[in-house]
Image (cartoon, rainbow, N blue to C red):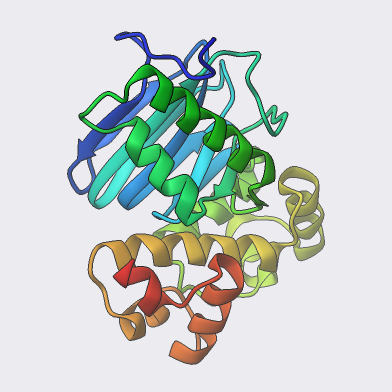
Length: 247
């Protein structure tokens, strides 16, 4: 039996998306592996957002509501798995590293030419084998629920380069630094500096996808210079911004 669904109503798909095109909130009765073959996807869920470049994918478990937004001309590819098929036993949306081999298998399974049954079965075995060993990456930007945290998040989302301290941001939203620090850890599982770094890197991916230079992106995201930005980017994504733009 095939591990991947191939019905017309819910099978492998390739969806071209224009810059800033959105797919609204929805869910599926099956698991999905979403991969932007080119461009960048922002994937939103009730627990947070992911910004996913071409060398990453995201596993979305069955029943989890999500929405997509494209940055730059984007080609979204998706594979659909029946609920019993869950190689990494994931119960929440998770960003995955996409190896070159896995990328090519996804391309083959979502292309215009339907593989023959034997070839498809072989490709699916490789896909599942790759998924069992792929690296899960903590690139989610958790969505806070506390009103004061949401106000801080809104300020920084409007201007990621805003360099105010947590105490200064607290004064703007009516909460102490200590309270906000405790709430960030309790609600997002991150310290405030970790959360802000994640926000800035998400914004950087979006700007790079839109054609901004590394120097301009570094400044817009609040880094002291290109070197600091490149170091943070490499630590998070395993590649430099220049290499990412060329991928």
